[in-house]
Image 1: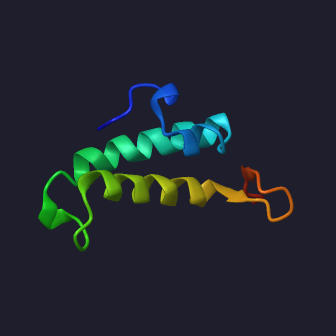
Image 2: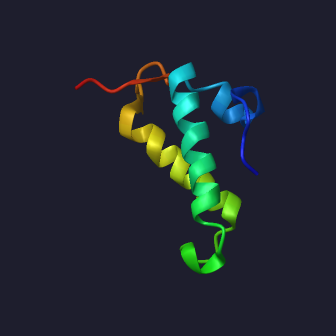
Length: 78
């Protein structure tokens, strides 16, 4: 179900992503939740929630990357 605030995000998101990346995640998840409400709009047998999480992570990965040394997420360099 859609998230109203960043504090509602899954622990794996809140504990690992910077604040701006959390906002990206939440907005992408909520958008995908609305967009992929019908099963025929999703790939394979994924649930609406699983699809929304995949879309959200993909949106984060466009602007952020995980630092190989520290394991922390950081903004990508242009």
